[in-house]
Amino acid sequence: MRTTILAAGICSLTLTGAVRAQDEGQQAGDVIELKTISVTANRTPTRKNKVGSKVEQITQAEIGGKSRPVLSDYLNLLPGVSVARNGGLGGTTGLFVRGLGSGYVKTLYNGIDISDPTGTQVLTHYQYLLTGGISNVDVLKGSQSTLYGSSAIAGLVNISTLGQPDSGVHHTVEAEGGSFGTVRGRYGFTAANEGSGFAGNVSGLHTDGISALADGRERDGLDSLNIDLTAEHRINEAFSVFGSVLHLNSKAEFDGNGPDDPDSYERARMTGGRFGLNFDLMDGRLKNTVSAQGFKSDRESVWGGFPSSFIGTRQKIDYQGSFEATERVLLQYGLDHEKQEADDAGGGSPLGKFDLTGVWAQAVLEPVNDLVLTAGLRHDEHSEFGGHTTYRGTASYLFATTGTRLHSSYGTGFLAPSLYQLYAPSSVGNPNLQPETSRSFDIGVEQHLLGGALTADVTYFHIRVDDKIDWINDFSYPWGGYYDQTPGTTRSKGVEASFTYAATGWLDLGGSYTYTDSRKADGTRNVRIPRHAVVLSAEARPAEKWTIGADVKFVADVVDGGAKLDDYVLLNAKVAYQLTESTQIYLRGENLLNENYQTVKGYGTPGIAAFAGIKAKF
Image (cartoon, rainbow, N blue to C red; front, side, top):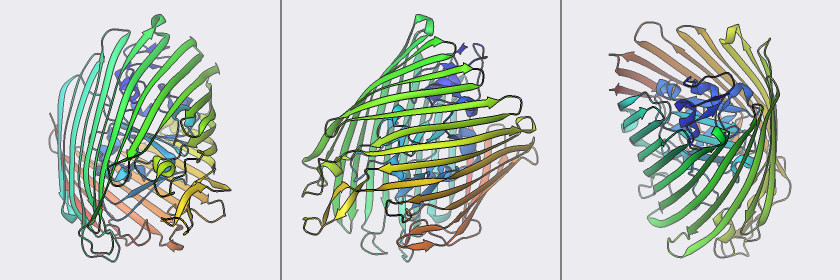
């Protein structure tokens, strides 16, 4: 039942740091394709055909196949996921999962929580995340607070960079230039031997951009630098150490008081690190991981020439254990403690701080072949609002003779109030706030046909959020209002349908359709969320050395600012030629139909664009 593999272990470094995995029927030394493994779903390496929750994956091959600069462009192509951006690259980017926004989605980068503790909401700045060096992204859908704590109401995005490096030392260099004065480059390296791996990446992007506001003429550009280092070293069969460091440094211009405002920009510096130890006992049946992490966000926002600074930190320590009671029973448990603090908008006096401690447990059961059940429970204690308990259950059953798999999950979640919502001055903050709470359910069927060449899935989902924290307009207060809990239930429900088809040895097809009905407590629709979204993709290898890929996304029925936005179709394509075994050149185009569209009312989007690039490995 047991195997030690670098592939799944490196992926699991983002959660447990372990270079190990468990999978029935595998022998020691086997390499398991990363696309078939999810560490995120159960916090232990699990074959996707045994996972009850719905998980989407983006692989390193898919990122290299499209060569787009920012991660949000890839997330936008997944079923149940959409992105809204204020203008071009660098514009504030909202990520929506199953009809709920960025504040309800937790994001981990090599195990580091990279959400910003300084904002009115705790969320991740996706506009600054470049794709250079990313090896795998898991998007786990539904309320997952039992495993991941606060914020994981709509789901979790788990990003890893080390991947499955080849033995030895390898280097990668990439460069690209094109429309809107855009240039970018990347240097990356990996070093690996048996049981150990190391990777580093430096990625940079500059673009002159477009006007953020649709009716503007002055360009709003972006300069962004991402640096990450990740390593794991196996000391012996029972002990290994791991570490990861991330630094983001970006400056993004935006339109402030008018459509042509050259003096408005945000400069963001974000640094995080995570280090830990894995140790196995009882001949490997008892696995343990202890780790510590820290994250600092330092942002300066200049609006019309007036600066504000925002500085916040997060420190976290955690322990995770798992005990293989039998070949069909895995018991997991963990403890974590987190502290957040931030300065006020002037960057001087402290805004506030809080502590959050959680303890959790989960059982993963396989009572009979092809049936996998999980049941989990978590309790958190917050220094302000006290205790909160969440739970989760999943089921997956494979009908092996027909290739049909049923999967379902039910979970609860919570979102702790942000530091700003609790402690903002002038009576804006409210220290009596309670957490937002959620319940989510999904059920689906996955079908494999044509010897596994065709895979299709249809999933129904329903999420409800109660105790929502919102801004209450009241002009008797100094700042015109305050934060408080609002009555009623926010609901989001819909259907995700997707397929992948390896049509021939040289042609791969894929596609999805998502229907989302997301509504506020008063019955009105939540903004910037497509009711209908269709994605189709194809990659062809018609001749030796040539690769042609394209994807199209159709979006319909989006509301924002009290109005319905225009429907649109986005077509992107890439043609690549392999000059040598180690060098590739390519041309790619974005918005090839030159659609004039908006994802946020009043904010522009780039028109037709072309880029040329080169990649070399040695």
